[in-house]
Amino acid sequence: MVSVDARPPRAREAPGGRWLLLIHQLPPKPDYFRVKVWRRLQRIGAVAIKSSVYALPYTDQAAEDFQWLRREIVAGGGEASMCQAAFVDGLSDGQIEAMFRAQRDVEYAELTRAAEDGDSDAARLDRRFAEIVSIDHFGAPGRRVAEAALAKARERRKPSTPAPPPTRARGRTGAVRPGKGAHTWVTRAGVHVDRISSAWLIHRFIDPAARFRFVATQAHAAAPGELRFDMFEAEYTHEGDRCTFETLLARFGLEDSALAAIAELVHDIDCKDGKFGRDETAGFERLIRGIVRRHATDDARLERGAAVLDDLYEAFGGRAAAARPPDANGVSGRG
Image (cartoon, rainbow, N blue to C red; front, side):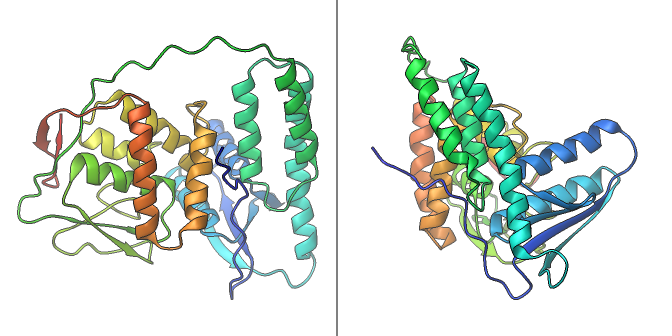
């Protein structure tokens, strides 16, 4: 059995302070937008320092989570700023860490009660446990109690009926006809689930001759022959509630049930909104987290991630098909 370390990445020691703060002001209406932002903050594990000031330990993933949320807030008519901070008076680092542990303990306690009350949805409980662990930055004590409750619940459960074998998908793969020369696809450095998965999708299904370039800045002016993805004002990035992987599927017309299943995993991990709630999400997230922790370079992360995604695509029953017309950027997929 292969064990993947599910601990969240350690906060980086940075000159500007060990905390990231999101400071926002939301419009009074509509109510659903305010609820959506609050739920997203809960999903990423942020704690409220004040009513409109939320904190996370400073990691690459935390920066990405806050950046996307800031963009959503601004697009929804609100205001938001993100900063790196060190607390020098008033709240101490120890007190903030205690706030994180207290919030996670509340979530572990809810999960423990559900397991002890005989909740029969084992996959949901395990998925929720993995979600909490992924944002438990400071080792909340409630984790051990929740683990024990889940273990007892598994013992009480009868063996489930084996699932039927997956149906082979009638999918689509892609090839690119880039026009004048192959494209260089540019994205932000420090790739994680959406960029790893999108790069795999691009190389295997959209542009087999693709080259990848990683830049440190969120904003990058594309040079001739470059296409940007999963970054500010990119040709291919988040659109509405779609992550970049979903945007690529839609823009290139890649109608493949296996790719659609992978898109749901990527969406829930990247957007943290629990929209699809697939059983496989927690395991895939742990694999991606393990890749990120083990490999420091973006090229190595893409290479290892591609191997995992190839196997995942096969497991979902994916297969290839024929070419589609190019999109507005001169890139064609197979259909």
